Amino acid sequence: MIGLLILRGAFSLLKESIDIFLESTPRHIDQKQLVHEMCQVDGVKNVHHLHIWTITSDIYAISAHVFINDQLVTKSAVILNELKSLLQKKWKMEHITIQFEAKHYDDTINVKNNY
Figure 1 (cartoon, rainbow, N blue to C red):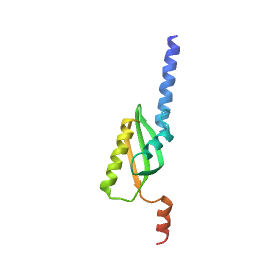
Figure 2 (cartoon, one colour):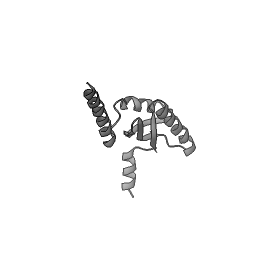
Figure 3 (cartoon, helix red, strand yellow):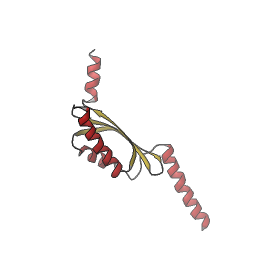
């Protein structure tokens, strides 16, 4: 019986270690719901290139491109603070990297190719 308990604990630890090593998305996070909630923040138009991974036990990271209207940096700081607050409080994200975009990625490529 004790051996089975040890094996069960070892299997759980091994599974968690593999998830951390592979930087997999935490199983309890619903990405569609997370994106939906991010898009509810005033000023956010769309979220793409979303990556969520486990750094270590119960410490999660997120990286995302967020499409917003073209505006002053001071106004976008308000959006960034609201997004960080949402991600930290509700989703327990410790490391947050947000890249704002004011134009679609395809438009940026076309502009560069015209020069």
